[in-house]
Structures are given as C-alpha cells and as structure tokens.
Amino acid sequence: MQIFEKDGALLLQKEGQIIGQCRLLPTAQGAQITLLEVAPAWRRRGYGTYLLKEALRRTGAYDPKALRVHTAPWPHNEAELAFWQKQGFVPEAVPQPGACAPAAQNRPGWRLVRRRAPDYSAVQLSHEFVAGRLAAPALCVDATCGNGGDTEFLCRLCAQKGVPGWQVLAMDVQPRAVAATRARLDAAGFAEPQLRTVCASHADLLRYAAPGSADAVLFNFGWLPGAQHTVYSTAESSLPALDAALAALRPGGVLSAVLYSGKTIGSGEKQAVLAWLRALPLAQYTVLVCDFANWADTAPLPCFVLKK
Ligand SMILES: C[S@@+](CC[C@H](N)C(=O)[O-])C[C@H]1O[C@@H](n2cnc3c(N)ncnc32)[C@H](O)[C@@H]1O
Image 1 (tube, helix red, strand yellow):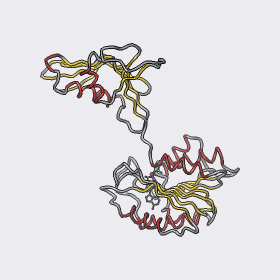
Image 2: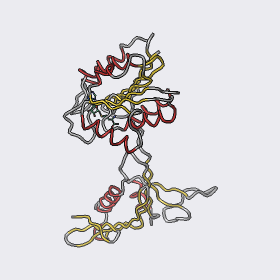
Image 3: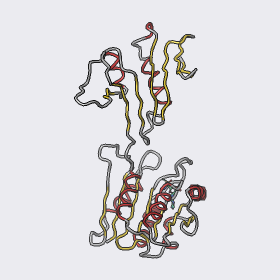
Image 4: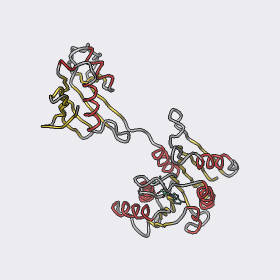
C-alpha cells in the first residue's frame, strides 16, 4: 500500500489499483479538503482514516506551534460525520443569527472545520513574563543563546522599551551556537554595540556583566536545538551560573529559567535547580515555579526569580 501525489490529489494505491483519493487545496493555514473517497469494496477498513491522516500531516495539521485550519465538505450522513469528528473536525456555522446544528444530511451555511491553536509554550510564558516586568531595560542577558531565539526576543524588547544605549549580552559555550545567534540577529538588524556575543560558560557571567547591572537574565537550559544532544547544560555549571545571575541582576530585575528533564539529560539538573530556587531567602527574592499541570513531568518547566 502506498500514497502518492498526482494532479493535486493524494492517491491511495493497494494491490496495484487506486482504492482512494483525497483532493485538497492548500491554504495559508492548512488546507481545504474538497473530496475524500475510498472505493466501495475497500470501505470500513480504516483506509479513509489512513488517507485523511496523511493529508492532514502533509498540510501541517499536527504542527503544535502554529495555528492550523482545515475544512472539509459537509458529510452525506451521520456515519460520515462521525468519521470526520474522530479526526477533530466539527460542524461550524458560517455565522447566521439563530442558526442551530443541522442533521448531517443538511448543509445550509455549515461546514466541517478542524482548527488547532498553537500550544502555549514555556518559552512563550518566559517572554511574556519578562516583557511584562521590564519598563526601561538597559542590560539584558541571554545566558544560553543557542540559535538566538531568546536573544532576538530581548533585542526586540530593548529596541521597543530600552533606555538609550541598551545592550543585550548573549552567551553560549558552543561556538556554533554563538555563530547561529549572530547570523540570526544580523538578519534581524541587530549588531554591535547593542548586541554583544560571548562564547563562554554562563558560570563566568560576572566577567561580562557587572554586579547589579542586569535587568533580566534568561536561561533556557538543555541542548542546542538541531544539534547532537551530546552537549547540554548540567547542574555543575548551571548552579554557579544562577548564583552569578542573581548577583548580576539589579534590584527589581528578573531571572527566567526554563528547566528540562528526560531520557537523555535525566532530571539531575532540574532537581538541583529546583532545590536551589526553593532555598532562596524570601526577604530578597520572590520565586515562581510555573508547571504545566496537565502535561507530563518532563514538560519544560518555566521558573522565575524576582530580585527585591
Ligand atoms: C535550549 S538551548 C538554548 C536555546 C536558545 N535560547 C534559543 O532561543 O535558541 C541551550 C543552550 O545552552 C547552551 N549551554 C549549555 N551549557 C552551557 C554553559 N555552561 N554556558 C553557556 N551555555 C550553555 C547549549 O550550548 C545550548 O545552545
């Protein structure tokens, strides 16, 4: 059995014959499915589901990071409606006052829609929280710059709200990460002196940022996305780095740390950092650990420290 594309349709071939097809028109956020059919002799064996899932996959329906919208033709009967509903399609009225859900065989002004909002992420929470805390930043530090996503966020934030002469310091132990950050920020229009990149361990942060000078220090622990998973942060350098970050922060400043655990990296760093966070004196720091309560224990864990 195989699926291949021909003339704008996905064709399902089995035993040398085409037994099903899915026609669709790609859209900016997904696709408009105009036809899904399986030859009568092959129905009720899961081939329709197989074909539909492949069509959804090829048009990005399972991307957790983007808004995706797929539409489908109105079903001919209740069984077909149940089929689409299993894949997340729901009847949606083209808004009309007073309309109610029709029986499956009726279709006035209704369509089937599968809509997926992007997952809310730990990094998104970190960015929103940090942005909400900073009024007029002068120095922000990305202590694990990786591919530069957090650095770009900090540069854009400073460009919008920063004092004249603001600076973002981006650090990483891996030269390839520093190069990736530079390239990304260059493309976004940020360079020296606003952006300073350093290839060094964040444990040495105080060599590059004076005590009491930073408005925000961001840590996004773990490994470099897209690289081998052999280099990742560990408690051995992360704890001294967190100490250094607290010293580098000015009163009113914020530390953001996204913690990870899992098969490859274990949970040693996460547990050590959590113990470190919980031991910080209340008189000097407010500490927040914001877990995604209905995800697995290995979900990224956003944490914040506010320096009083
Ligand atoms: C999850 S990635 C960071 C993602 C990055 N902030 C971004 O937006 O693309 C973690 C990074 O931490 C870096 N790292 C690991 N140990 C480090 C250390 N001791 N000092 C500085 N960076 C370190 C890794 O090289 C990796 O690039």
